[in-house]
Image (tube, rainbow, N blue to C red; front, side):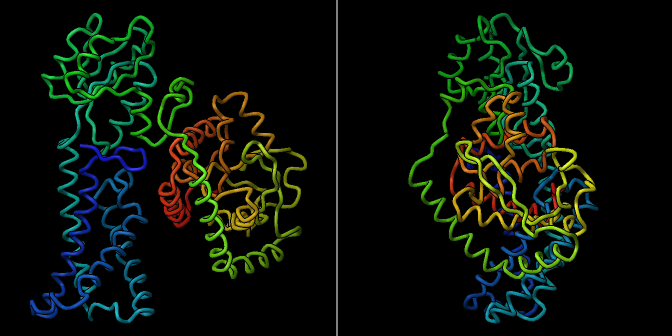
Length: 466
């Protein structure tokens, strides 16, 4: 069973896993309370449940920000143990700060220390059980994949590479004009029948409730009769690009056609939503300017001491409706860095970056002055990252749908930034556009909030900076 959140589908078991882990942490603290006070009456003490809930929330937040809910990162016991200890250590620091500010939130002396032992034991056990469920494909939704072209191959690779995708491809039915080598790579059953005869019988016999159609060529070969029969029988039929979008949180610009974009859901840009986004941008800008004032002053001084040149760097960027505006950043490179080379993307270990520049780029401090761009209305906090006109002209000629990026305001952060990272090539630009189009298509305030929270995680882990 799948749950739809922000236009993406997630296995229900993943939601239960996170909730279950929260209950494990909650139970560990509650058990520690019973051991320390040896009295059931203490368990029913006023506000105790709220204090335990605070500890649970802080612990799970630290687990999330330390990548413990990314199973591609935590794939062995050693990595799990190390990150778990780091997370609990940081949770202790955060709770100490909370208790210093709000003494009434303190749960009791020694309880958190005892809780840690139970939390480690029970979380490791819980995750071992969950890994067993994933390895045995329990509760996976079985699907039939029709097609053998690049789109079908991408879908197959995504499902087989993700431990917790929630899907199992039970049957692959290739099309005549697809990638012949694709079916040789599958571990699923492969069958090919004239005009896709017996498709519904295969689905029923294998208890399949969903068929994904990712045909390379539809003219003259589309199995309308069989698919209609399956649909009437209650089997869900989903188009390959739509399935890939929900599975990965991105599109594939090389595979989608204008018709799919025209008739698919999304691209809703209501006046009310734009107004709410603008107001939230202004409020957040003022709050951040006040909070970050010490960082702004310190950074300006360090830049001035470290190298010659202005503190603030101005550069033209292309904004909404292709309007040119000046973007503000703390200068992180030497003055006139492109005087000889001309416009170019930043590289790994770029020798144009100053000593202070390396630090502020790593922690995204150089982006702080863009808050002024948000206040002026040139940018939003969340949106596709703005590009220079030189690169825009270059990329528009080779990447389909690239101009659709300019239908919304550019952002300080965006779905592509938290999902893909830094891009310094045409290939990277294509991949980032896949994520940007998904964002533009599925705009929502809740999604903006999620992107901001993931941006904090990206900054803390120093991902994708150059």
